[in-house]
Image (tube, rainbow, N blue to C red; front, side, top):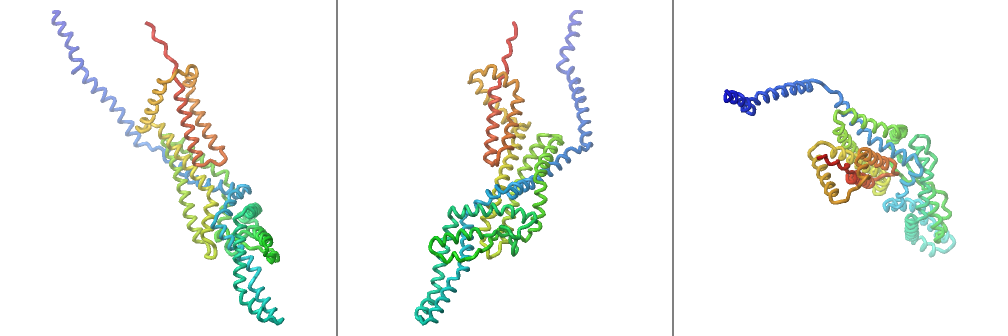
Length: 444
């Protein structure tokens, strides 16, 4: 009986791992498969408004980003006199613009002196007074004399243009012209100021520069230049074919110069918060923002080509190209900086995510820190405190980096990279110093 009972008692034990558990596993898998399948079908049927809404908000923010850059540039570089002067001051140091100004001033001064006309007049008077031979000789060399004077004037003016006196005069002219530029773009003036609109061109009055050239010529022996009256010659800056449209755009952008950046950041932030996957949306927002800066750069290149094609044949194409490149250099600096910022945000969001590459990178970083910890001494209470407050320290480091970037006067792409590298170093130090407190040994 005991053997029979023992055999009956052993039968279930022998069936447990084999046939006894199999029905239970199949039932478990059937139960788990059943509820799993139902929500998936329900998820496919249900339409979520969050994804398209978040995508729309992020796209609108990326579209407004280049307009924000242009609006801020317009406000900072055109509406502010000191920044306007800082923007146009390098123009006088560009060789192409120096040559164009030299040719323009030489032509204006030589035309007013009229050496050939004065020489012919003197020759005629000598001939009338009986000095026919001298008169004919003087008339014969009038062309060479005029050419020599023109060469002398050209060389002297080129030295003046490339010297510090003309650079100072250029700065003063443009400082005075700043208000006139605003008046031209806003449509409130520009007829009698340093800047004006003439023959389809926005022009700069060169009278102060010609006055400096006259003084130098008189000081170097060409006293006849002192008799030249005040000459209001003009130098074409850019075509005014579409000036009316530019004025409307200026007024609109000037009104929205504060609203546009705030609206851009709000749209991008709302898009990220609305999305079902915040990290993925942040990656998309960063990449989209960076792509919008590339679009702005391409737009500047296209605008440059159109601008150079609209330059009249009488103007210097090299000087026009140099002027365009110098005037938009702050826009290019801003778009490079923002491009780098967008890429850094996207990279940060990616490497904190659950993808295999992100997890592998973090694991390699953690193992490296672990080796450093094992090789170093204990950080003591400081390590325990850092570990306990590591989340707050990370947020503080990111916030501090963001504040430095925002309040930096004119951050460049290099400054942005340095800030990102310092942030990574700070986060690494937090992970390196922070160590969990030792667990007490279990009692025997």
